[in-house]
Structure formats: C-alpha cells, structure tokens
Length: 77
Length: 152
Image (cartoon, rainbow over all chains, first blue to last red; front, side):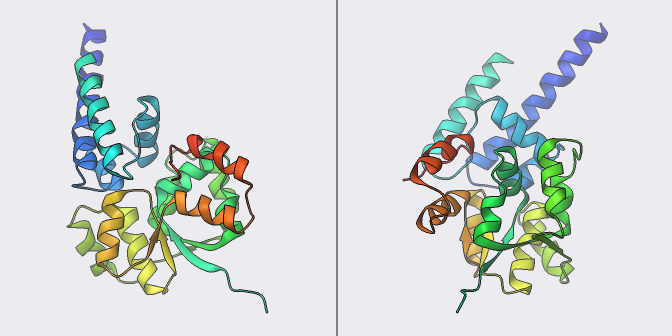
C-alpha cells in the first residue's frame, strides 16, 4: 500500500511538472517560473528535461517537439 | 589598446548548462560575468553536485555576485511570470548598464527585449567563441549537442 501511495504521489508530481512545462513551451512563462510553479529547484527541472530529452525553447520547432514529447510522457504515466 | 570585455549578467539556467557540460570558462574568456544573489542561490540548491561546486569555485575569481537594489522592480517582474533569478538578473542588467543578459529561454528573451535589454543565448556565446577564435569549429560542433543547442 505504501509503495502504491508513493508511486501515485510520484506520478502526480511528474504530471504537475509536465503541466507547467506545457505553459513554458507555449511561451506563457519562463523556465525559472515553471520550476517555481512545479515547486522544484531549477536544477531539478533541468535534470527532468534532460532525463526525458525535452528541448530548451529556442524556437517554434522546439516548442512543437517539447509539446509532442510531453504528450507521449503523459500517456506513459 | 586592449578592448574592454563586454559585461554579461547571467541567469541561472545557462550557468548550470555550461557547468554541466564542463564549459563554464568559455563565458569568462569572452565576457565579464556578473550574477545577482538569487541566481547564485538557484545554482547552489544541490551544492554537493559537481556543476554547483564548479560555479561556487569561480565566485570572487571571475564570477561576481552583485546585490540588486531595486526590489520593487523585481517584484513587478515576478508578477508577470518571471522566475526569481530571471527577474533579479534583468533588473541587475539595467542597474549596472550591462551589455547583455544571458538567458536560455524564449519567454525571458521576449520580456527582456521589451524592457530595452539586449539578450544573448548560449548559442550566441558559442558563435562568438568561434569568431573570437576561443573555440575551433570542431569544438563548437562537439559542444552543441551537449548543451541541447542548435547553431544555424
């Protein structure tokens, strides 16, 4: 039961990070703001992005790629 | 006559990215680098990690920390979806009349431009390193994927 509870919390946390990253890829906020909204340090956000191979938002191609990958990660959670 | 190095105020993300790719010194070779307190704090959240230690090591050597004076202005930026470090970096950039704000996201670039600030990204740093003969073409090509940047 404890493991199930922990897994649920972890996936809820990841979903929250993905939710704010959607805002970031839509150009609605900065990366720093996104990490503050997700309640994780910026360094952890950078780690999360590297782990999931999410791009930094430089141009519209990155935005599209980021949103596609987020959608894929969400389905796997 | 020696040319003055341009002054760059950096946000936390580019510093962390450069430190993670063990390339932090590139910005030192090109610019005088200044950061506000909050940016330093953000780089030190996991102070035991090598990238954080690398950044801490160069403080007071070539990386200068300056305290932002205008807190009201920082607070106003925080209300418009800036991160704390980014807001302090933008205000510090104005206060010390820095040449550039080094940032790593589109939102910050767009907002900073509206404040009248000139911005650069890590891709610009790599390009300048190449033109300034600080890096070879091969080093630039090798360096770019490590930072998840594209050089067009």
